[in-house]
Image (tube, rainbow, N blue to C red; front, side, top):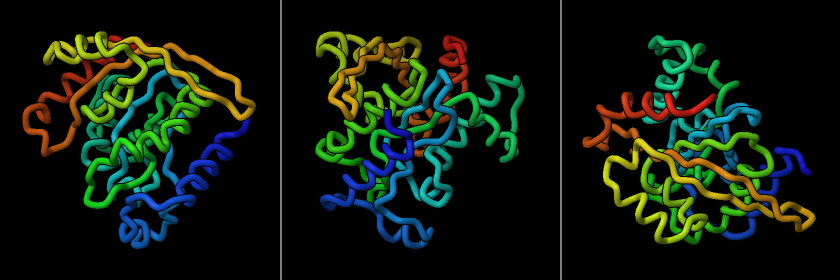
Length: 226
């Protein structure tokens, strides 16, 4: 199997093949190559993955997914679940990297933070499949927001997915079981069973759930071994 660096190179080559919306000015101001993906942060041997939609400005600057306002809530909540204490210390929060990975549906920043189209998501889907199936060793994923959760819709039956999603807030206390498939460089098919735990997106703009998110995250983490 190729190394994770090879996978990152493959994603960059795909990005260079054909233009798609990227927030070029943000990358330029951060002195970053806009075609180079910011794929993940954390430990590939961990058992838990936080899965977001795409990158924001803070993520481009830091070179890490989920490090802005929403990501900070996730990191603080995960730290609290491990150490039973609150912290805003950046060095302590950085220390969680051995216990999780953070990634997104698309490893780039869209202009004006508008969600990528299904066409763009599907263009990069094979690489995210490889990442989750072949490189990451865990099998429990917490999705952040509707867009991130619905990325996994095609791996479930329409009936099962809709039944799960239509439960209202009860869906945030349960997990959807799926099997993710990836194809390696030699054309071999690999499958991995996953448990998908949806949560609302922890953005300050998400007024319905923002204040409730920390408690919801703690409940979800209490159901997961990590």
